[in-house]
Every structure is written in C-alpha cells, then in structure tokens.
Image (cartoon, rainbow, N blue to C red; front, side, top):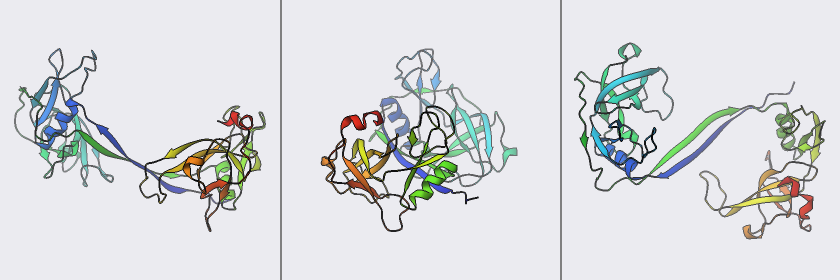
Length: 314
C-alpha cells in the first residue's frame, strides 16, 4: 500500500471593513473605556449595538452608555487556549449582560478554574493597557462583588479621532490528507505528468480527480493521462500582491483545459505580458527543478483554439 500523503495547510487573509456610525461609535468608545449600546423602538438596549432592529428591521441610531459591570448569563470553560485567543491561560467563554443592557456580550472571563465560574456571577471589564478601537480593548472580564444597576444614559456617540475602519485577520490551520484519486494525481505531478480519472458512465475525464463523477455520482477508477498542453478558457488579472507570495503584480491566473480533460484546472500564466493573455490561448506547463507541480504555464506558439473547442469548459 502506498504511503498516505498529508500536508499542513494554512488559509490566511486580512478582512477589511468600513464602519457605519453605530459600529464606529461602539469601537471608538471602547478605546475611551466607554461601552455603548443602541436603544430599540420598544426601549431595549442592545450591546453590542447593531444598525437595525433584529425584530422590526427599524434603523437604530439612539446610542446609550451602559456600565462596565454585568452578570454572566452562560459560560463554557476553555482548558487549552489556542493561538491568538484573548488569554494565554485557561479561561471561560462567557456571555455577559452588562448593567443597563438587555442583551449579552460574548467575551472571556479570567478565572482560576471552572469551579470559580457560575451563571449569575458578577463581573466587570478589565481594560487592555493599550487600546486601539477594537473588541480586544476589553482584555477580559474579571470577578466583581458589586451590585447590579439597570441605569443607562444617552450618549451622542461623538469622540475625537473616531475609528472608521477595522482590519481583522482570518486564519484557518488544518492538515489535508488526499484520498486515493488525488494521491495518484499528486504523485503523477511529481513525475511531471498530469492524470485524471474517467467516469464509467458519461466517459468524461476529470482533472484533478475526486474519486467520483460530480455529474453521475458514480465512482471513478480508470486513470487517464492528459495534457501536457491545454487551452485558456477564462482568466483574471491579479493586481493585489499576496503576502509571502514572491510574484510581481499584475499577473494572470487562468482556468486551463488540458488536452484530453473535460474539466479546466487553474494555473498562473507566464512568459507573456499580462494584457496579452486571452481566451483560447494555447499553453504548456513550465516545471522548476525539483518542483512537484507546474510553476506556471506559458504560450506554446500554436494558433489560438477555436471557441467551439472549449466553450463547454468555461
């Protein structure tokens, strides 16, 4: 039996968004150690604030300040914090209804152990020493012995130098283990060959293979070598440089229908100015020494493929 292939993979990107007046006021308020909610038409105070009433869809703009103390409504213990979580030591995830609010805020509670946490316990905000206008300006919650108060006061939401946008990193770490079909595909690539699998029912050849026909739903086993040349079916021009990717922008990423395949795969187009890439362009793979997959595809010099030859693969 061949060795099972596996590899650690990371999907990571920054998510950037602009803030409207409500979220801008909320995050700027955290920077100033002030917690703001928004009042609905029926008098409820929502924290964190939202721009529209979740029940009536009414636009909400009436901001109100609530206390930095509150009550735990529910919780779950986290014995093994992961990278980039708010605390490096074991903690409790908690929903906290701040005094003066009618909804709960999700954050973490710094506690010595699960026996020290219970629903109904009183807590207060521990502010981060350095605050920038983000939810992390609340470092965590901590136990508090004071009594609850239902007071809240109107707030204009106006602060000097308001926060108008945020950048949130998104990251997913996982280990990928391909099955039989994709293992054969990857092993063939290491030999500078491209293989797919043919459906026994519709007879289409799928590259990369998945072990089953996505149309017929039947298992595939017949291995078919395709390419190495192919045709650009569609493409896009990439103008934003990716982190840790040593490719100068702009460049072209394309769907390429390899000769003999009934499904287009994607690859980078090189060896030609980006503005000369076109549908129907005939290309071939370029391999780097020791590479386990094509580095990019370049023009073959052949005449462009007729549209009818690849229109079903768009």
